[in-house]
Structure formats: C-alpha cells, structure tokens
Length: 360
Image (cartoon, rainbow, N blue to C red; front, top):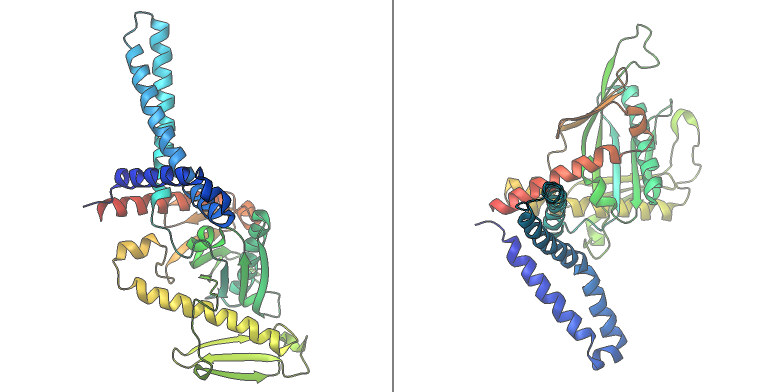
C-alpha cells in the first residue's frame, strides 16, 4: 500500500487548527516561551496548509469554469477554457510542491557540509580540474551567501589539488549539494599537450554532512594522534615546527591529516571535524544498507564510484548522466552558476522519491 498523501494532509490541517486554537488561549498568550514554541510549530506547517487550501480553491474555481463551458456566448466559453487551462497548470505545480513538502525529511538536509574533492585518474590534469571544481563550488557558495573554510588541502606544484576538503556552512548547503557526490569527468586539451590531443581525467567529489560532537561519540582511547612537521610543495611554505596532525581512528582505520594551519591545536580541531563527519557518514551508510535500494537512492547515497557528470571543454558542454541533461553553458557552470544543473537534478530526485513513496 502506498503513502496516503490525503490522510497526511488532513492530519496536518487538524494539527494546524489545534495550534491556532491554543494560540488564542489567555494562559498560552501569557506564557511567552510556550507561545513562541507553538508559533514556531505553526510557521513550520503553514506552507503545507496554505498550499493545500489553494489547491482546494482551484478545484472550486475549475468547477465554476466548467459550468460556463455550456454558456451560449462563445466568448464566455473561450474565457472559461483559458481559465481552466491556467488553473490546471497551477494545480499541477502546487500538487508537486505539496507532495515534496510531505516527503520524509532527510535528517541531514539542514546540516553544513564537508565537501571533499580528490584528483583521480589523469595525474596533474586531474589535479588542475580539482582546482576548477573547488573554484566552482566556492563561487556557488558565495552566490548563495554561504561561508566556506578550507579544512585540509594538498596542492601540486602547478597549482592544482591532489585533495582539498572544504567546510561549506549555510542554509540548505547539504540539501542542495548532496547530489554532487560522485565522479566528475573532464575532457580537454591540457596546457602541456603539444599535439592538441584531448585528454580525459577524473575527479571524485564527496559530500559529508558536518557532524556535531553529539552526533558521534569518539572515545580518546580509540584515537592515535601523530604530530609531525608540515611540508609544502617544491620546498615552499615549509613549517619549521611540528604542527601537522595525523589522527587515526583505530576501530575503523579512518585516517585524517591536517597541516594547513601553523598551530597544532587548530590543525587538530580541523582534523577532528573531518573525522567526526566521516564517522557520521559511515554510520548512516551502514544504517541505509539495511533498508531497500529505492530508499538509498531516494536520500542520495548512491555509489560514489559512479560517473555522474562530464565537462567537455572543446564543445563547451556539460552533461549530467543521471538525468540525461546536456547544457552548452560550461563556462557559466564553472563560474558558479550551478543551479542550471542543480534545479533539474533536485526536481528529478524529488519526483523519484514521490514515486517510490507512493509504491511502498
């Protein structure tokens, strides 16, 4: 039996009316903390109730317009048809929005993220493309008003990244970027290529929800912490003190290294932030493995080895293979206009989630 959207809406509407009644009671009005709590609950479900009420209003308007289709005046019939078409289009949009609002919430959606970019096959060219993706995501974050902080980086001599881990903080960071996890492929002529041949390289992106201390319990005896001297590429920026930190989580074997800061304490704090997030992701992945494949796909935890997108420089083309989307706006996307891809992606995955929920 599928998810009963109608019953869920009726339940929410009844709850909404109950809160409205409570907010008008004198004893609740006097209790500021209680009043604020109820008001917060009301605002949380208000968009659902408003959307539902508008849909009910559309149904009534459509019934009225249907009656006018039999009017002897042709102009009135034509106006009624136009009105019915407009209302049907609005109804379709609002019905989808309402179903999205009723989807079970991904517990990570409100979290900040750790965005990990790693150069894969392709050597220096892959590292340079990792730098391009790093720039794309930081510019996108700027457009959304999010803050970014580099937690760890491993640069190459030509300015690329073997690996970079970025903390992205802001409303909706995880919910919008969670679908970026996977293999990003680039096709272009490297600057070092004298024959003008197109090379194919790959970069892996991982999106981890930021873990708070309360999310993951890490015991001190589970950690091995090594302190060593940081080193820069090509002998540059070499730290003269033992400030780099490597933390090994013994039960899982997860290793995190941080050497960007000159302070050992800051490096340790950043490394612990990365470790907590990797452990949280591991825990959640193990939980998700116990449920159906459809559910795992719905929350966006697909196989990271899967190639999700290709950036073709000679053709100025970017293709997302999961939804068959091809845009000839590569430059705009790399400049941070990522919503060109993310909006269709999110719509697709929400639609799939609604289908899966209706079938389960």
